[in-house]
Length: 267
Ligand SMILES: CCCCCCCCCCCCCCC(=O)SCCNC(=O)CCNC(=O)[C@H](O)C(C)(C)COP(=O)(O)OP(=O)(O)OC[C@H]1O[C@@H](n2cnc3c(N)ncnc32)[C@H](O)[C@@H]1OP(=O)(O)O
Ligand SMILES: CCCCCCCC/C=C\CCCCCCCC(=O)OC[C@@H](O)COP(=O)(O)O
Image (cartoon, rainbow, N blue to C red; front, top):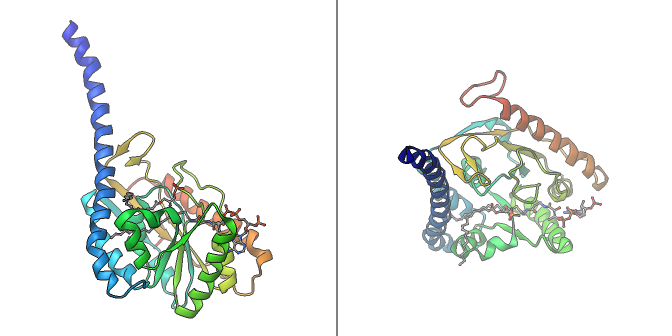
């Protein structure tokens, strides 16, 4: 009798513990592996110095990680990236796993805007710097704005695309946070389109709160570009709301799809 009670209590506990243990091991390996890959990437990138072309090296080195973790990534809307000129990509930000979806579709000569703290993340920070990642100090709005204004000039002068997470921080809430306006000011200053990218919720296979990290599937949707030609800074709030609305619709639609089920009309 006592043995049965102990088993009934112990097995669920052990099961819970093994899920949590697996989560921490997988996250530790994820970060550790990226830091290790960066050691390999640094000398290759250093040959060119700080250069956006180095982003191709990082992308190539990171692409296999989805296989290690059994994460299937399905991409829809590739045709919306068929624009030769620079543009600003905006995407939702759930977790550091977004790196996988980002690297899956990262266009040529495209650099992300990242928080300054990432520059100090050891080898990964140096690799990011060499690949031209634009670092902003989120605690100093004026500094961040002037870095982004410089980025607008660089985009046009050097034919560079920029990737921004307009939520400004990771968000596991299952929706989208209000958007910061920096990405949209950037697009209006450079008069280039905004291309929204939506990554489906990870809730079926990943949750930081529940310490869950299993295998699973993520859909990445590239939405049609939103033009900004002729818009002025006064139009930024409306542009921000419009793009967030489009992304929220896509995110909600993707969240209600059953994994593996293809809805009609989306390529
Ligand atoms: C081998 C392997 C190696 C390793 C490889 C690893 C690769 C990793 C790469 C991936 C990196 C991913 C990193 C992701 C992140 O770090 S996300 C966090 C950082 N990103 C952001 O924060 C971007 C979004 N933030 C913004 O756009 C903000 O607006 C910001 C510019 C930062 C300012 O924020 P904040 O201080 O909170 O102020 P507000 O947003 O409230 O803005 C204040 C007013 O200023 C106006 N504004 C904003 N930007 C501009 C601008 N560019 N020009 C003019 N005015 C601007 C804004 O509209 C506000 O005014 P109003 O309220 O509208 O009047
Ligand atoms: C010697 C120092 C060693 C430090 C080790 C740091 C470990 C970091 C290791 C690897 C870096 C992996 C790169 C992942 C890139 C994803 C970046 C990311 O997701 O940043 C979060 C940022 O968007 C928002 O930050 P907050 O949600 O506001 O917080």
